[in-house]
Image 1 (cartoon, rainbow, N blue to C red):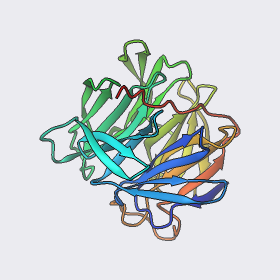
Image 2: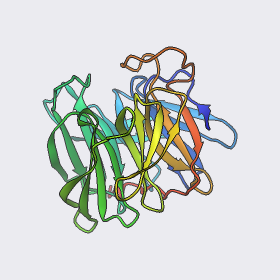
Image 3: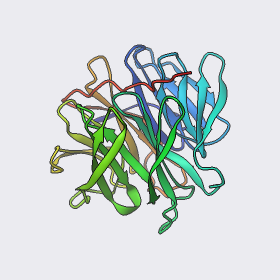
Length: 292
């Protein structure tokens, strides 16, 4: 059973990140151009306005938040709400925007882009690796909609999905160098509803994916087999994140009216964040290892 927890007025919820130190959930509204923070203990929520559409983010040890905005990444300082651009990852690519992003186990930020309107048959997206020193590497191009980024508990496997191709790949990953090699199809989505969207990995190595347009959340074993499908009260869930004191609650963001995609009626809480009892714990989300 999924419980609605927060998100009044949100249009395109994405990128939930649990802050284990503060016990709060960070997430964002792409169409609302805002970063949001929710405290489940008291229900309080704060919001910071961004200069353009944010796609994903990572917390940093110094209190800043690394945010992927439009064609690059920059720094949000929650103490005063200021945003400072840092790197332009796709200069001149006006039709693209940053989408899914996540840190590897040692603090590099991986982020992928997509065509602004997810136009069918347009594969202009790229997968980027951003190192703490500001080095930026394009690892994959020709992508429709970058999604599904996640890392195995040991940090030696990386998952990546292209929603437009309904496929999740798994790479061998070297946490010492940040090299992702030998991609193989992890799931071609056969037998699963909707499309693969954002994802998270639990402590057993199972892969949880939001099933966009599928009203559900799916758990796949490390072998790619379907373990279970959890029904949700929203048509377009976008990304799960483990949170709570024991990291055994899954927070799931979603798309609602105004999110840029047609949705079926009868979803008054669509766009908000939902909580699901996972029955298993996740892993603390790594922070971006900012060097300056």
